[in-house]
Amino acid sequence: MSRPAQARIHLDHIVANYQLACSLHPAGQALAVVKADAYGHGVVRVAQALAPYAPAFAVACIEEALELRAAGLTQPVLLLEGFFSNDELPVIAEQNFWTAIHRPDQISAVAETCFSRPLNIWLKVDTGMHRLGFALEEVAGACQQLLALPQVGRVTLMTHFANADCLVAPGVDVSTQLAGLAAARQGLDLDISVANSAALMAHPAARQQWQRPGIMLYGSSPLAFPDEVAQQLQPAMSLVSEVIATRWVPIGESVGYGSRFVANKPTLVGTVAMGYADGYPRQAREGTPLMVNGQRTRLLGRVSMDMLTVDLTEVAAAALGNPVEFWGLQLDANEVAACCDTISYHLFTGITRRVPRLYLTR
Ligand SMILES: *Cc1c(COP(=O)(O)O)cnc(C)c1O
Image (cartoon, rainbow, N blue to C red; front, top):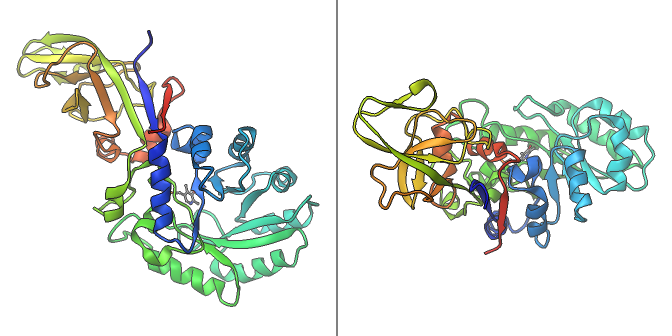
């Protein structure tokens, strides 16, 4: 009937992962981070599944937040990257979005705007990531300015870690960043939010009023080391397809573009409907693992736009129509990502429009 490439999205797993995130710090609350189309899982369905549990969502920009409103979701939505132009501000207040502020001139923009209701602001503090935010010594002044404005409701301090995912930080570590924030917050009675998934999972000191779990909701661990919480995550995306052709390739013959794979023994090659135009990375190395009939085997040759080739020689009952899983319930996306010099975030967000999402609730 149709091309078998599909991303199966296990909404019940996303809910379970969100509940696991919350259970790590019941005294606080967790924004559900659903930016980038819920990391490629489909933001509307994911947000609808989380809506009974999540007090608020977080996205990158106003366009993503408006998509949630268009779908009928009523929770506050935090704009993690703030606003890009000042004309977004009235809409932000009207729609009950919360916005990050990361530059001094954005405070002036707020001061010069009339709002239909008080604006909740998340002041971004640069504690060592050096991407966005106020320097530590600017924080007190910025907060004073904001809190003096009638336009402003609550102010929350937020920072982001550079190395929460590693056991030994190659640069600035979590405790240094936390100490910086604590110093900047001296004398200010404000809520704070610091934890992404990695910090929430592995750094108890980062568990504060608001957590910001993203990747863990989708069942993939960001941690570069084994972890007890990581073991409890349930993969949310199974990327699947089917074998659409098989052939025996004799010794010395090659497969695919650039003849990267050359058979050193008679090889049963399966051609699968999945390619880089679906988001399966062309960077995948020779031998990248995948599952056929529930059995682990390997990628052969270069990934093409719409197809790729796999080794069926050792696969039991290898035949046309065999189910293939590229990552998901049977194979950790992190393992595939490592064979593509990337991370699971990149794999998930790279799945293109051509791949239909099938939503499962149990
Ligand atoms: C994306 C993002 C998060 C979520 O990070 P994960 O590693 O996916 O948990 C948290 N905070 C900010 C500021 C982000 O941009």
